[in-house]
Length: 218
Image 1 (cartoon, helix red, strand yellow):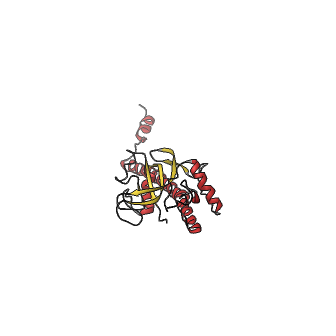
Image 2 (cartoon, one colour; image 1 turned 90 degrees about the horizontal axis):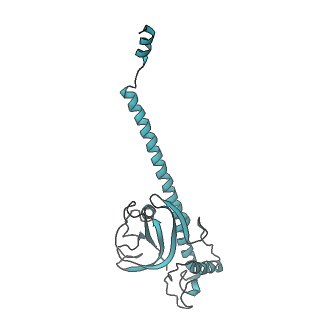
Image 3 (tube, one colour; image 1 turned 180 degrees about the horizontal axis):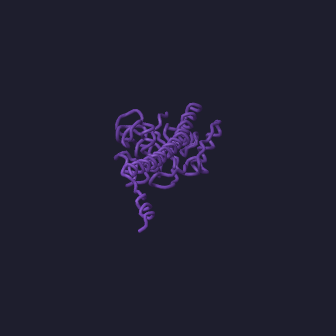
């Protein structure tokens, strides 16, 4: 064996434990930043849904009440489905395309803008949940009973006008509960599970839920 070859072999060094540890730390930081970045993006999407869809419909209902003294979607007088002159302060359970067309016509008649979404209709919103994938969330104007902790003014079994959401990703519902009520409790507060007999399920166990947002109107 030549001296030159021996020298080349002796010069080949492996990584030290310190160097390996540094590399692992760097990899961990990169992975952590990636995961954190995904969480931030998802949080931004959830807040956008709240501001662009939930809040806009709430504002629209309140503006209609301030402008007309009536509840949007309550009797034909207010774009609802029940007979003229039978307004009782409760949503007429508006849940079809035709019924929302009537509501939109009434909004235009009093000079109010119709909320816009990322779909072709004002009462649907496309959202990609963490576990559900991309789904279409439906909005309904319902008069619902809140059985755990009462409605907007407290007390058991209180019925209230609600924005009722169907097919909502569970992770989005839990996030909205924290945004609106300050804590994720599906049985209490203005935003809750429907029905509110149980708390929010696990995100991985039940990927979509129905939820209600209690409105203080009238």
